[in-house]
Length: 229
Image (cartoon, rainbow, N blue to C red):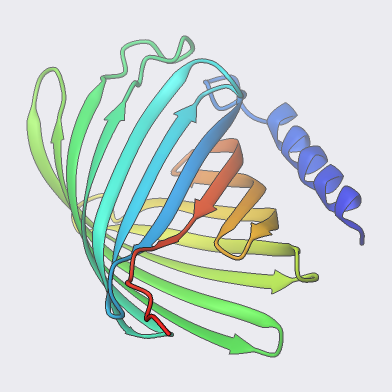
């Protein structure tokens, strides 16, 4: 399967799900535009940087802003522990769902990543705990949840790759099930530290499913001092 066929498959798959969704806001094909960065400051430490802009539609009807950062401790090339903070601002007033509240959330998270390789397949297991401090127009409250993501990356060649993952969200209060995210993408390595992904996300909540196109940019930097010859 060549790269053009892969792109076409993703778009057709997203359009099919879009056309079969219910008429409650989930019938819109939305989009997430994302930036991720790992900024190395020493052999053991790096800083995570992240920004996401989420829309109910591909280029309009703002839904959510997510900003996240964290301090990574590189135990080894295959194990990373992170302590981080996130700010999330959500606009819940999509035209088909009036009355939804806008929220601001401050989030602390603890994370552990394990990586392994089987042949050409690269696996990543991400375990995350979150403490969520949420404010609405009428209330302030705290929630806790756990997340697990299994990600698989397959290099087609030196430039192109496939990326898929499934992530489940488990609330540590009622209701127990939070959401599930199933994702597939085609990626391109522009440089060794710079890549782009175009993908499709199926975001499942209890009784509701959202279809989202995703455009992700991953740019990693290295601020370690280079040894002089």
